[in-house]
Length: 458
Image (cartoon, rainbow, N blue to C red; front, side):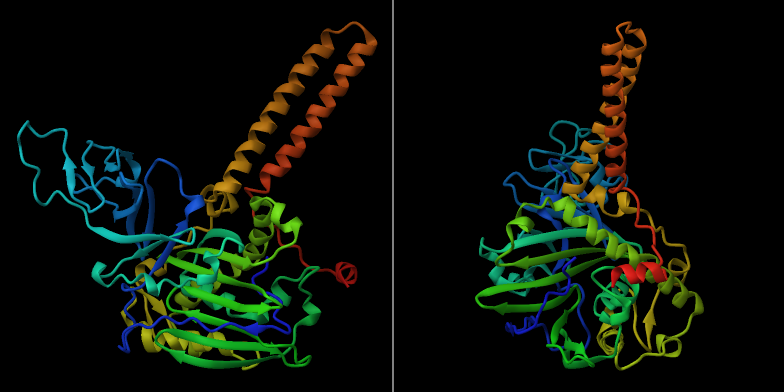
């Protein structure tokens, strides 16, 4: 999972921080939020999601453009996302009311001929655009929806760039995800494996280059070895950008977008990109690349979920609970302080010294789910691979049963031996297909490092 590119001997590109209003209060509504990768959208049906616990629905109108409405029918409050799209109109499944891209009701089957559709039979609409393979939402004033504020890299419009995209739903607040990915110190400990070794844990030299209402720019490097700086940016409110770099005409980096679905839940859209990749990486299936990404994020998942629940149950400020080190936690603390200074307008947040939380919601247990519900079912590539592997497993099981039945009826020894061989082969293939299928369903099992394994890694 290439979140942190090799930035040794690289030249950092110009930093991207969009220009927002000069208010000291961050306006969370007048920002772009990434909903989903276009390739992962279900075809020919509406797509339901949420932003800060507000249910929304996405669909395509008659012209093929994306439209977004509040996910509630004004008739009897049914969810519009459970309906269907007919000729570019979103139809409620309950009574067939149909709505256009602007939220206006266009058809009510139960009205008498010639009757006028009630003027308040409408749904609030939101501005959405498609850019660089992502659908973006602007929840604020549509007249202020400036596409120049989209937190994207213009270089990615060049078709020579290879993009590796991954999305995942997580059972904790967006701020905890951002805290996690700007915390490089945990990697060699919590992700100890052949690539990241716990023996490499060491003090980090960390610097904050700039803090403003637009976000934070910082960098870090190993203090002992004095490696090249790794640069990162937090671009408020949804993006952590790692090391946009160029070297010998090549450009690469990583964008980690996040979407605050609600209290105790967020979505991440991770994009690695490079202007040149090896042929092996180019032909590697997308679902195969997701195995490693799932493993790394699942190693963090339970820890972060429990961290949030514990902080909220104690009811104390992070400043009272944390014992931060300058050589590991500088960026994390500065991010929480950014929330203290600019985040008071957010629907909810947890800063370093302040917080705005719904206590009743915060104390409810968060559903952790599994790999199937958090990733596979919302990823088009992994979902398809999971379905195929399940069908193969079922086919091989049926074949094994059929071969077993035929073998019992055979009188010729040689023919029976051949059919028994086919039975064994079908059974083995069914087991292989089952094991492959479970890779899309089950979380990684924490493999605690023993002395013997540590010697193997070294």
